Length: 111
Length: 115
Picture 1 (cartoon, chains in turn blue, purple):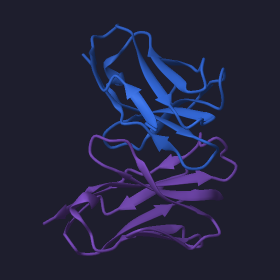
Picture 2: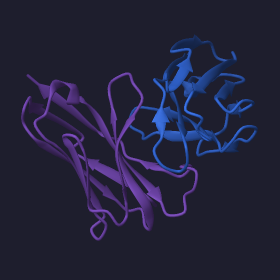
Picture 3: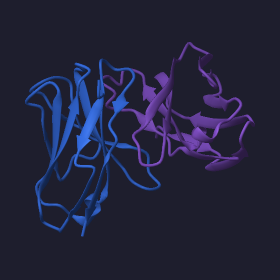
């Protein structure tokens, strides 16, 4: 039981490049979330999903897109990376509105 | 504006000692209050979740208390261990937030336990 996994763990991009972050969970959770964590700020919700095939915007969605084609996977895309998107990205999942389980994070640097 | 403020910002204690971390919030009404532990370079891990009607909840050596009247919560760590070195984050869920989409995250208290 791996819980929540994220790939890749580290990535360096140049401004304007695109990439996709993959999140996978094996707990059969309905809800999945993408957060970013920056120094001096609390975790901020980017996008979330309440079930397969559904996505919704969170607090800071601009510059990101997501897809939930399979219940166990939640993808976060950056179409044209900007230095302001340098951050640590966390994926999380939950059965309902309670306890969230987080992945190990992806450290992204945009030059 | 809904806010969650934690104190102290950082704390250093000796192994075996107890400590208490504070969380003050202005979120009202709220559904539940959570404490997470985040090790350096890892994702947050849930320690406790308390509804507005609960006063205390324990998870091993971790005990969280909640005073909804004064809008304060504390996390008490007993007999600290080196592995307790981490950031401890207080999170408040507003009433009717739904789907965890409006959680208010504190900035955390960074705890260092020295031998």
